[in-house]
Length: 233
Image (cartoon, rainbow, N blue to C red; front, side, top):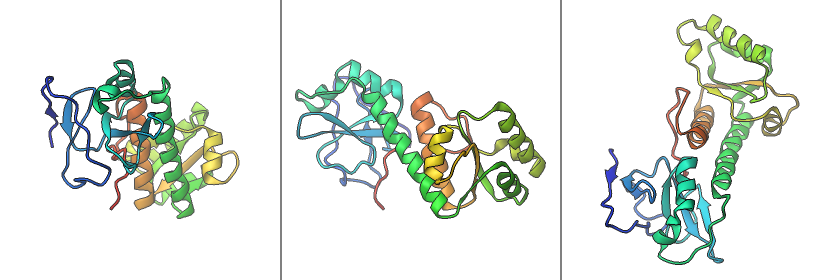
């Protein structure tokens, strides 16, 4: 559904609560003044202490304001004091709110990776990744952000050997350090891993894409962005 531009004369609208009008509803970004599906936006609510709180799962009580899920958009909302205008009251907005949103989205992506690992959908280590590629089981590749260029290149070569047509188009995740991968996968010195085809890996790739879009404003991989918020089904 195409986004609808809201008349600048209109006040930014709030939703009526986290569970209201879930199916087919639209939300208006208070920065860009465009109405559209809540996919790709972040919800914010006001806590009991008048602090603006990011609600990345769209489940917190109270009326919510929505912002396009990119760092520049959240930073603009802070700079222009748009949360006070949207909520029509004095609110406290942390200057590091864009950083907090990124940390929450990163935590979602890491949690998805950890769950996929527990479901048996992740293999780690060069030999296991190469083997999974050869068997045609890989939905995406994970490289630590501090991985060596040589290691990444060798994994890429293995992907092309396994499938010359699509090996270069496998989604790549490079959002996490080796230490973060160690913690998510419960093992030491993880530099390269593979996501095996299936639902858990699809969720990992979608969450990582949402994080990438927030950080960079664009998608470099082949995976479409997931809804940043995680509505209940």
